Image 1: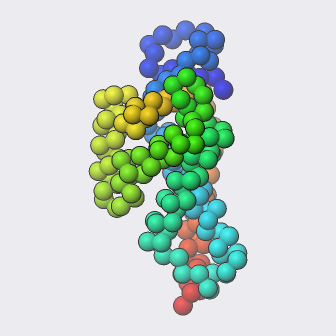
Image 2: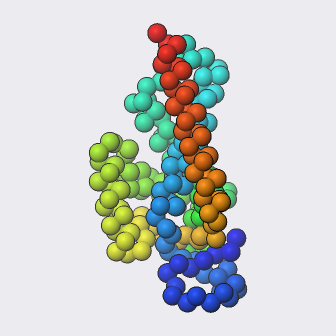
Image 3: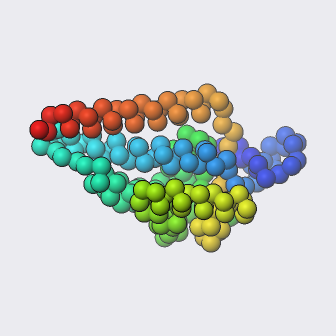
Length: 194
């Protein structure tokens, strides 16, 4: 994956220096939507088998349960992806890799620490209203320091490849379709539970 250093002002097209370069910053919206994709994917992977095994009439999954279960599962899903591939499915779609400063993949311990830090410091345990405040604080820190506090503490860098507009469009369509399908299944379940 060609790596682009977006902190550099040099606009030369030297591909060898691009491949060696790891940047410590990516476009914030790409990271945000990559995480959103991953959370929706984990929700989809968890929710659909429950409906297949127990059926919609016997399953009463509430939003509260979903807000507790999905982040818990995600804490294990995300590090697993980082250790094996250096990216989660969402980050892969946005051409983002999460790596050590030397370009190697994260260890399991470091990946779990990072996931916990994101859950606590970046997403305030997913608690409504607090998550907005935590996201704002993390974004401000990112704007000032060009990296998030947990990545700075753990010495993690991001490598970002070239991403085309078609890839962004396709990824956002997948997010829309998965979330719409989850919404449809949730509504279907709610209609037939009573």
